Length: 414
Image (tube, rainbow, N blue to C red; front, side):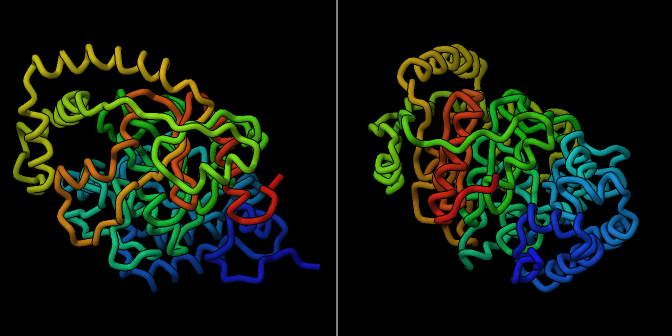
């Protein structure tokens, strides 16, 4: 009896695609061709900056044995266009690098490709990965297939759109203040930002090196965990909620549900971190110091405004914020002693896709996300938009797997 899913190929999970390719039930070429056709059909989503049709088909036809039998055999893969990819342009969502074609591939991208994944394209993002909406002035706005007319989130909005729209089964994103978790919540998918440094950022254009996190995005946390295993950074934990001490940072129905599953749930409060903004803004501007001096006019007005915020941070304000950061981390260690913390990733209505991304809008959408980049703690978004954070990657992942199992009504994949 065939175990091939009775659904269109673009609805298959990474597990289902790889198993079918390994078993010979479908070829990597068929899977790739189907997803490339899907990308063309849903060009309105503007999920990609570059579609790699010819390269992807050539790769699928010549897939070597170790990749054809790998854990991601034939899986359509969409790295955010901030990761270097040899022979495929990498723009970082900017006009500055519109024609840049790297000679090498970012380490985490290469590891997923080595496991059998096939790059079908590079996904749209906020310019230089600074933004919560993926309203890109150079490459267009990413659209939300789950909530038409609403933003896809940012800065990894193209990845969220591609996954939710069935254009790819796996993506790789970056998160400096919520850029994996916000698109995951906006598009109804899953995304994982591990502890700082968990996944190598080798070959990834920096925004703020001390806050940048690399992480997988997929339609389920199980698939994110599969990517983490392949990347060699974590083993799959046993799903668990019972017995965990859960701190609720913002009202969510998940709190009562977790209590019913045996978790110890209590209210918690995330210490305010608005006074740390000078670090974020000034370091982001510092990353661009050479481009600002030489090619300022190539930035969009939106990014010019963001960079100007950073350029106007005084030395006194920056140094004070750096001193405050040490105290903030100590305060969170003391006051947030829970196993996990939960809250809606986006605690406000999802904005219309054409609503300008103002400083006020960014504040409304990120009252929780950026804190965990300052702290370097793991934090993820499950497919229902719930954010789960904590100190320990294994505990956060175990809780996320258990929570997503309750959403599907079936056991998680062994």
